[in-house]
Length: 249
Image (tube, rainbow, N blue to C red):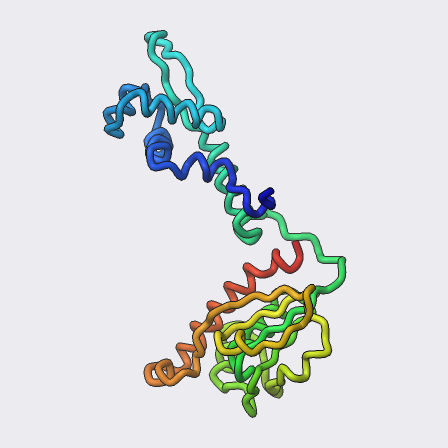
């Protein structure tokens, strides 16, 4: 039996068919009779009638008799229902895609523990650590590297300070070897190399991988080193914000 996450939302199943999507697109502009849809879409009437019946069964489309000629039927798209269905489908894909107009309630349960990792723990993982701490003070977050550098990369410190008002002056890279006796709910690797060597933190730890290029790589340094770090920080910030509803649903 499929888990809830594996069940394709009804709206996606209905709208995914090319003919039904074309019907929805045309009906989004106004109400049409079936013969008008035949002309617009260029498909036979029996085929369109079949797909319209499915859309009506999904309560996306309704039909009413013409007040001018009761032999005619007009088809109407329920845009409100479509909007809600699209929202629900997005939330089924990822909770961060559900637009919540009200601020989320303050988290009162156990604080989730998160470990960010990269090779040197000098740029990507400390950036992620700092940004998650900025967005969610209820999360226990740290970072470490498989081969920690002597110090944080100065462009990483500058990018966080200028773009987000975060001061990492004085923070030093940490080694993954010092984390193995700690429990983490989430271990998130930010580079492909560390993913291959990251130690096992137990079956209850959820492993997540973000494949983010090293902003200190030679190719990036040849052009505009600081811009590469600004871009990396922006990408990580987006990923961290999408991570928040996963950590505290």
